[in-house]
Image (cartoon, rainbow, N blue to C red; front, side, top):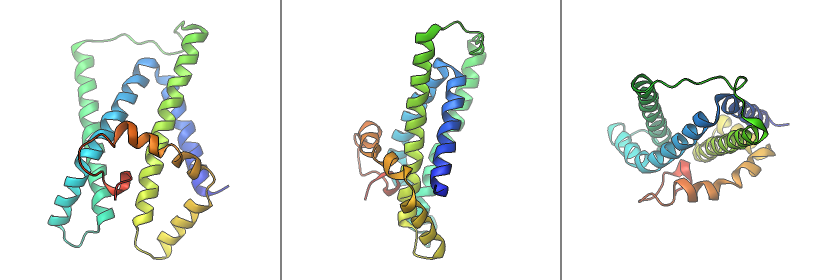
Length: 185
């Protein structure tokens, strides 16, 4: 098993477990947040990367896009956390743990399905960004090793099969060309 396969598997299991334990409402909120982040990344990463390259002319395209992507994701994450904290103060919600809930088999199945969808979407998004970034790295020993690990992986091609669907759902309908780390040119 490749190191990349182990990382993908552990990431999937961790995301699935956390999502399953979080409950249906939080998982649906996380799915909506994933969609908002992907749309914002497709819309803002390109212009922000160009601005970063104009500030630092020596910065490569992949580095500016990766930094812009991280800035977009972090800023939306901070806004999301702040908004959820504010909304919980404005309208407190009593939420029981999943062990105390009496959801029945159908509720348990729907939560498992939602957790699976969220884990697949998040892992596929992360693999798409990582593999597109690794393909753009300048040729040196480290980048060749990363490319070899990605090529040796058995899970990366399986996860990348969902990439066209991911782009159709969250990226292709956004005006303009998406950044290269999200599958653009």
